Amino acid sequence: MKLNLFKKYFLTTSAIILVSFAFLIVILSVWISGFLAREKRDLLSETCQTISRMASGWVGEPDFIEGMGSIGAVVSRAIEATVFITDASGQPYVCSCDLYMDEGSCMHTQAQLPANVVESAMAGEYYAVDTLGGLYSSPYYVCGVPLNDTEGNAVGAVFASSPAASLKAMFNQFFRIFLFSACIPIILMFFAVYAMTLRLTRPLRLMSEAARSMAKGDFSKRIPVESDDEMGELCIAFNQMTNSLVQLESMRRSFVANVSHELKTPMTSIGGFIDGILDGTIPPERQDYYLKLVSDEVKRLSRLVGAMLSMAKLESGEMKVNKTGFNLSEVVRTIVISFEQRIEAKEIRIEGLEEMEEVRIFADRDLIHQVVYNLVDNAVKFTDVKGWIRLSVEKFEEGVRLRIRNSGEGIAPKDLPHVFDRFFKTDKSRSADKSGTGLGLYLVKTIADIHGGGVTVRSTVGEFTEFEVRLPSGEPALPDDTGTHKSGRGKKNKEAQQ
Image 1: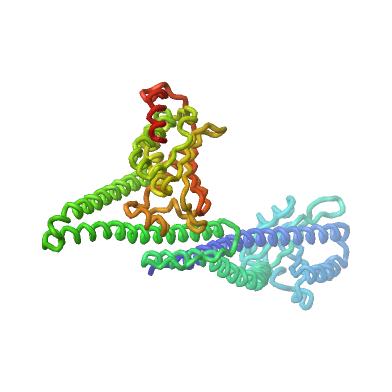
Image 2 (image 1 turned 30 degrees about the horizontal axis):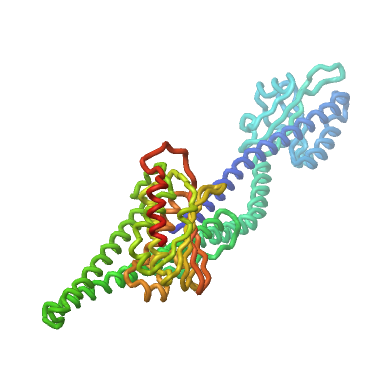
């Protein structure tokens, strides 16, 4: 069965907790059992040493057996162990158990301890978990020390024994208490892990759902940002990505709609004019006029397709920027002269060409030529009859500044933020310029951007419109074939102004 992220995270964390807890239990079990065994040995050893010291000065006395039996009984009840004394041969003759105290004989006094056990005890100390040669049916903790007479000679041994089962019972009791006390924290820990896992995986689950919705075309879902950690940053980034996709989708739809509109209008006109010529609706004497209109529409389609190809290359990065050194002022003059007929037709006054300083930049000449051409073309289109166009090129701290200002109706404030958008046309521009594509200013801004510059627009309705292009000067370039020739150009510029 396929597990989702929440189950995987929760089960993995729970398994880690359980394994860690089991490991802790094993370590505690080993440590506690060892600790209890050491404590039991120390207790039995200390008890034997105490009994041995008390009995050393009493050995051979008439009431030795009775007195030591009573003392051993008191001590054995206190430590829950059996204390008995043997002679040098390993035969017990004093015991602290109840049966010996009642009847004077018990299983200890009737047994014979192994010789090696007695020898070890008389030699110093004996300690083992043993049955003492079959004396006990189950293992006992047994400790033995020598019993010395008044002269210091070992005449026997003092033993203390305690069943190993009692220590095991104590360990089991402790273990049950530990498990019971740990159950509540473990349960609380599982609830905490569940809540934490749910909180951590919820944004990811929402992102997965939003991604599936986006795959179906629904971009409305956003991920709530509930923290300021890495997960919160991921949610913010996802929402920003969604907003970008929404914007791109809107731009794509707008682009398709605009392209369809821009292509449909001239194609409809072309089809209508040609059909009118073919079916005789347009008389022969008017056919040349309408064929000229068809030619204009075909040229418009050509300009639109060319602009779209340039736009596509610029946006995809396929268009290479070949930077060379050239005179920007000379490019401006050349382009203005190319508009001489249109300028004279509208009786436009050109200002600033003669005073324009010579400014060289390091950029792509063809692309910058397109920028200047589009701006001059735009200015000529919308300058009123007998109006003026003022041009200037100058250096400033960060590079080069090109300004083109023209008189005319200007641009409404509500349209200024959109003049560089693809296919954008104001109502005035659509009526004044039916041949425009709406891509010229967009290309101007794109080309300026890829050169590391920028473009801005200012306008006052009924007075003027001004475009300003800022370009970096670039690296120093060697002189090329685009040097200035003021004498020839100046004459042509003067003629253009006239």
